[in-house]
Image (cartoon, rainbow, N blue to C red; front, side, top):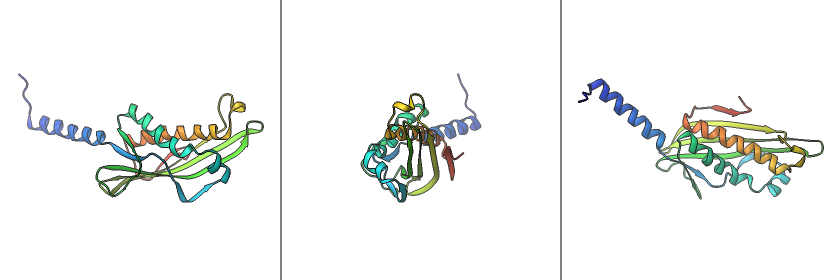
Length: 171
């Protein structure tokens, strides 16, 4: 027979509450908008149309391994009940090409809300020169690599959100 002391019971309840808080799903919009002050080249906006949907998808994918449930929704309301992550693409820069070398980066910012209150926010940036076989990749593919890396960074941040965090290549 197991006996539970008052301290043991309090610890058990505290851990249970902590695990419940981590398990609360995070709503993220299926499409990440460009911020009002976004610095994004017109060619990137026109040609790399999948970037906006890739970031939430990668966050959802990588969150599965970190124990955070992400729910992709058509639109978010930061004032809604529950946890909501508001994301914005701040910059997407595409310099170079497959012949002279890729020099690409994507910057994002995000704010996590819980029941309408700001919990924490972050800024993130990832750079890429294309990786293996870069000479055979297009610009949008290389920018996609930066968004994938940011998705992994953000998924890790969601597990333990820290206010005013700098993710990826901003660290």
